[in-house]
Length: 265
Image (tube, rainbow, N blue to C red; front, side):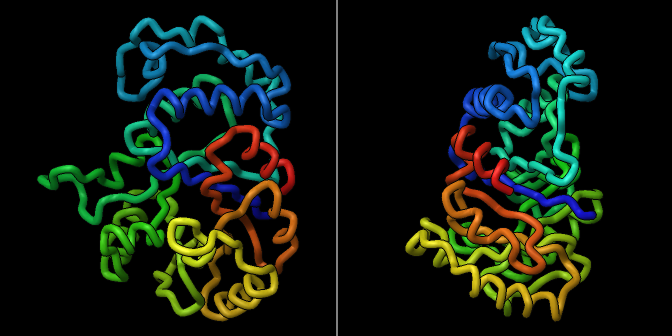
């Protein structure tokens, strides 16, 4: 049976330290992930101690808690996968914290460069993201509006993501949106349901079901819904045919709210 995937899109909301603080709180308030809910304290010098490629420890406080011994006390939901999309700058620290504490959380990037490694000032390539992440979000409405991304840039980014063995999460705005061939996950997120652009009122269950049915006629991808999903309304969407997850924005910023949403799924 496929896992139900719950994706937290933090957008540009958290610093590195706030991201680690969130994971500490998530660890302490989510008993389904950690049976022993006493979260270790981490100082700013310690969060990078478990980075790959031989990065030197900066007197990591994490290691002093022997958190590697906590794995036997975790109870990951085998039918769910939690994915968090932090800022690029926070991605290494988040991945390191999760690894050190055996948190059953996957990570992803909110976008990626259209280019491979090279002389592209300011860009972050898919290969570089792959050190810390498994997923990449592509074609989000905010990227299209503010950064003029289009079907051409989607194709280029999709190619880079796949070449580097990452899993793309393709956002679409309606049933007529372009979906790259071979897409594993498609996220239906109508702009009207995003508070950034529209009313912030989620699409009705019936309308989502209709769009899902149309998408399934042209794609075998697993389908997620996004657009003002919260712990208060998530039950309205559970049970929609073909629904296999959610993309969560504002409701993913608070660990307790996000935990409640996950528990409801």
